[in-house]
Amino acid sequence: MRLPCHYRVCDENQACIIYEKEVAEIERSFGILLGKSFLTLRSQGAYNLENLPIASFDINTTPSLGVYFKANMPFLNEKLGYTIESSYFRTKMFARSVSEEFLVTLREEERLINHTLANNLSFTYDIKRNEDMKFFIMGGMFFNYFFISDYYWLFESKENATGDVLGLSESDYNYFLPYDGGISLGLGVEHRSLFDRNFTLMLRYQVGQGYRDLLHMNYLSFLLGMAL
Image (cartoon, rainbow, N blue to C red; front, top):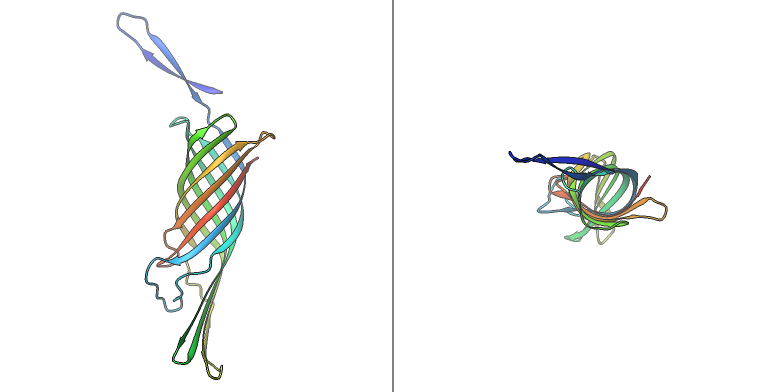
């Protein structure tokens, strides 16, 4: 279905001529979203906090499950659209540092576990499309809320000659913020299957704007959406 738009071009000595232009109907869809993300937590400068001296954590991989809603915007441009997503994933990140100073070995470990509600708003632009398939680029913003978070820190000093523990400190005080946000960029392809359902495959990169002082979270995600 297309909605008509009317334009009038009239001359003083002639009858009014009406031009009619059809505007595409707004297409909406709702579906489930499966994903696999690679998450890094790294420092972008000198990082020196009392209980957080380790500058980077190991890369974490995590699956995600969520829902999405998307629609096009033909009233602006038939190639434009937007997508709203909400997903859940759990991350478990580790950092470890070992060094030697004056016959003493220093060992430090950190563990961070987050249960995350991830929200993303993206605007899309179709770069190529046909009857059954379209390719698009996307950009927008994200906001992640860590509704359950667990943190643990350990620092140990041990004498090399005897193996005796000279000092041991532990803490479960969570210095990290309960949220993170930033920008997202990506590309994708949407295909209508034989079962008359739209499947969407996306590759997206998200850059956090500051999770804890100079620490930033970066996400690289592969996503598969299926319209219901």
